[in-house]
Length: 125
Image 1: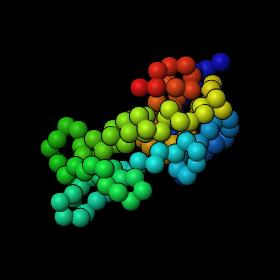
Image 2: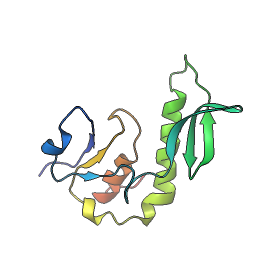
Image 3: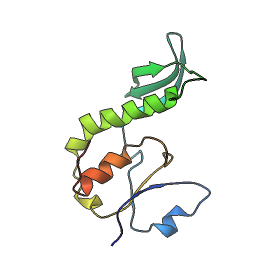
C-alpha cells in the first residue's frame, strides 16, 4: 500500500485516470475550504485577501520583492483557519488511505495537507 498523497487537479492532465480512487477535497463539496484566497482591489485592502461568506478576514498588499508573497501568506492563513475551524468537525473516515485531489499547486499551501494527516492518523496541525 502506498502512502496517500495530495494530487493537483488540472484541465490539461488526466489526473482522474491515474487516481481513480482519490477523493476531491476542492470546493464545492463537504471537504472544500470555505476560506478563499482572492485578489482584492478595494481601497484599504488592495492585494491578496482571505474571505469567507463574502467577508474579508485579512489582506496583504502585493509586494514584489518579498520572499513570501501576499498570495502565499493569504493561502497559509486560509489553511490555518480551515484547520482550526472546519477540520475538527469533519468525518474523515471515507478519506483514510486514499489520495486527495485539489486545484492548489503542489508547492502551495493547501487545506488538503492537514486533511491527509488527520485522515491517516497524523496530527491535524
